[in-house]
Image 1 (cartoon, rainbow, N blue to C red):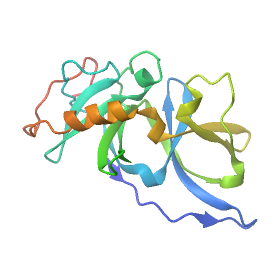
Image 2: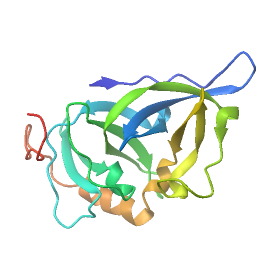
Image 3: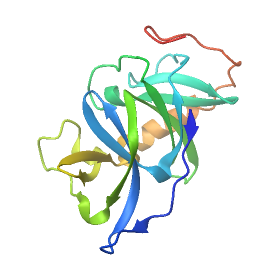
Length: 188
């Protein structure tokens, strides 16, 4: 779809540091990820299932010859499996594991919204209770006008064991171009 070019954090006229976040929809809620973690956004296409992995791992995709694990973020948050439609995207992120090796992962989201600039002063601590996902997954609540977006703490979403499993999934032999099967309801 498109590659994102992050800008360095800048200051707004009041002197607060502004950071950029990619906002997206997931099961009716608005979430955001720091733009520095985002590698690219692609349309949801063919995902090849992998046996004996946790249910939140949807499978793998062939990204220019590399095997990239794809996580159903809604499922990871304990919600129902994402329904694929024309707005469904895979947000490719880069995460470092405990050994400081960088891994590319895909996150299935319902729709990508926009890039937001949120001042550090407008990022409030996660709520102690009442969140629809585990609070350790939340970096903070970004205030955007009268609304809030849930800013995710990516390094908390996957445990060390899960990162290890995903790195093993990512070491599968390269998939042939166009390889894989269609998910039910996916667009060809």
